[in-house]
Length: 423
Image (tube, rainbow, N blue to C red; front, side):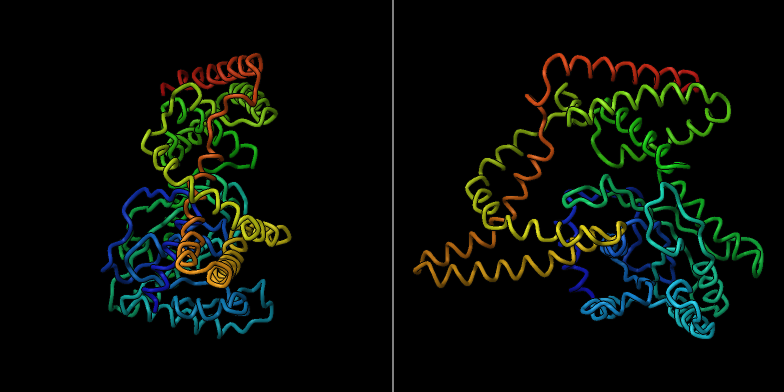
C-alpha cells in the first residue's frame, strides 16, 4: 500500500509541477537509520516532494493537527507518518507525550528506519531559514544510544520558482551525508553541534536573503545571469544565486554604495518589465538566447486535436482549486489546490465518461470516453506553451528598445561588481 501510494503521488506531483529538477545524490534504496532535514515553505507539498524523489522508505514527522483533517489521517497512516504535538497547537501538552514520541522515533531509527523532519517547526514564507529546533539532533542522539544502526543525517533543500502556481517548477537539492558519530562532543554540546551542522548544510543549498527585498534582488540578478548564459534551469539559477548571495554579503560590509547602485538599476529594469507584462526569460528567448526544440512544437501540433476539447471540457474544474485556495493559509495554497484537484478532477472525469456512454451511441461512446480521459493531458502541453511563450507583439519597438537599454545598464552595474570581486 505504501509503495502504491508513493508511486501514485510521484505521478501526481509531476503533473502539478511542470518540471522537477534534482541536484546532488538522493539516498539509495538500502539507506538505513537516517534523519532527513528540510526547509519548509510549501506545507504538505514539501514532504511529498522529498518522499517521491528517493527510492528508500522515509517516515515523515508531521504536526498532529493534520490527523484531524478528514481523509488525511488515512493517507498519513499509510505513509508511516509520525504525529508530533507542537506547543503552539497544545500549550498545555504533557511532556511525557513528547518523550514517548521521541523514544518511538529513536527505536525506528535504531532499527534501520528513516525519518523526514522539518526542523524549522512550521511552514513559512520568510526569505531565509527560521532558527532550527534541536528535536532532530535529539532523535539522532537517542538512536545512537541504542547502539544498533549508526545514525546519519542529510539535508535536502527545496526551491520553487513560484510555489503557489500550478505547473510551476521546483528544485530538490540533496546535501552531503553526515555521520552522527563524527560530530564531536557529548550530550547537549553535541546536540547543538549537530543542529548547527544541519543549519549550515541547508544554508549551503538554499538561496537566502536577510529581507524579502534582498532575496528578490539576489533572485533577479541570478535570473539575468542565467538567461544570458542560455540556462533556463532552476539548478543553474540556484548555483548562480548562491554566488550572488555571497558576493552581496561581502559588498554590503565593504562597499554598500555599490550594492545600492546595482539595486537601483535592477529594480528600474524589473519595474519596466512588470509594467509591460514581460519577464527576463521571455526577452532572452526573443533575443535567441534560448531555442525551443522543433520536436516540441511538432508534438504540440499533433496534440492540438485533443488539446482543444481538453481545455473546453475541463475549464470549470481547472478554476475550482484556484477558488478554493483564495481564502486559505498563504503557505498552504498549493496544498489546497492539489487536494481540491484530487477530489474535483476524478469526479468531473467520471461524470464526463458516464455522459459519454449515456448520450453518445456505441461505438462512438468509447471514442468519446477516451477523449475525455486523454484530452486534459494534451491540454497541459498547450497551456505550458502559452504561459512560456516568447512575446512578439505585447510591447512596441520603442518600449522594447527602452527595456533593452535598462537591461544593459543593470548588467553593466552587475558586471562592475563582478570585476571588483574578480568573479
